[in-house]
Image 1 (cartoon, rainbow, N blue to C red):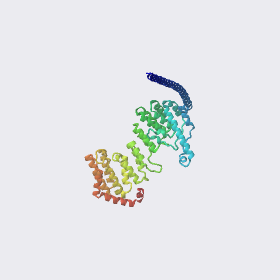
Image 2 (image 1 turned 90 degrees about the horizontal axis):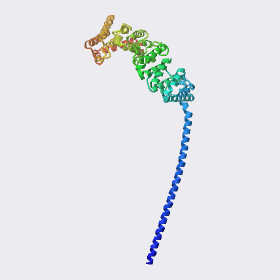
Image 3 (image 1 turned 60 degrees about the vertical axis):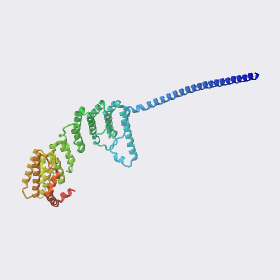
Image 4 (image 1 turned 180 degrees about the vertical axis):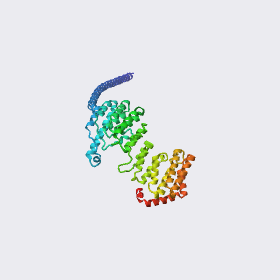
Length: 445
């Protein structure tokens, strides 16, 4: 029994000891956890304080940077940069050559220009007052060496990215903004401008943005510009572009203005494309000036043939066109009528319809050409068999068209000419013509 009591006592002591150990471990863990929590709270507070200090430092840095950069991006400050730029008017050859310093200087200025224009676009309508003040000041920087007036005559949304001058660049910004206020300022600039490039650039942009609203003012401005500049620096292809724009985009009748198109240069050479444009814009009204040029003795045979093909649609219905046909037939002597006259007769028999009823010669034109054939036949009563044969062929074709209302197919016509032996006879006549007129053969090559 005594041993039992001793065993129970030992077990109880062990239990108490185990409980004490567990309690001690639990108490120690609680104290460690509390300490950790205290440490974490302290570290969190320190980190929060450091974060606030960092945020304050960042805010201060951003504020200081804004104070330094924002005034440089204001429209007025941006436009001030143009005043320090250099004009590049006649330096392209120098830039293209091995002149690295000048080339780099020009490139740096172009980068500066892009920066200015982009900054103005970024400011939006806030830029308008500064742009207006600059444009009204009359200041301008020629940015592209040897920039020419034809460049802004082309449409394109990105034209402002490669401006030939500071003023054209600013007009590009107004176009890019594309709102009522910017377009109104663009219109005001166009009306006060004297530079043809600026007027044309503005007119094209305004018509593209709102043709109905700006049509009349664009027509007025372009016409005034032409009245001042046509006899000086707006000639040739530049004038053609302006007139085509007025007619095609603005719906203006430019026949009175097209008289200024000069298609004969100082040496008497004829530029066919300019003559075509004058004829296109003026119609029959252009034929007297064409006849005047056509009749000059120094005009070569090949050039007359080319001119005749361009006013073919008026042969038979216009006296100037008919007189030029007669000059072609009669102007090279009776011995050459078979060659030259036969070719002209074939041209008279053709039209642009080519087997369809579209563009078929009118009854009035057909009758006028038949009358012209009769006159030419009577004026050459001598035995010129090939010329008379060509008149007969042309007369038959015209009568067919009058009866059927349809122009014969050109391939079929050529087939008939070959089968009849006409083309062989014409070839022999041309060879004879070449022998008798070697100078005219030279001009054809």
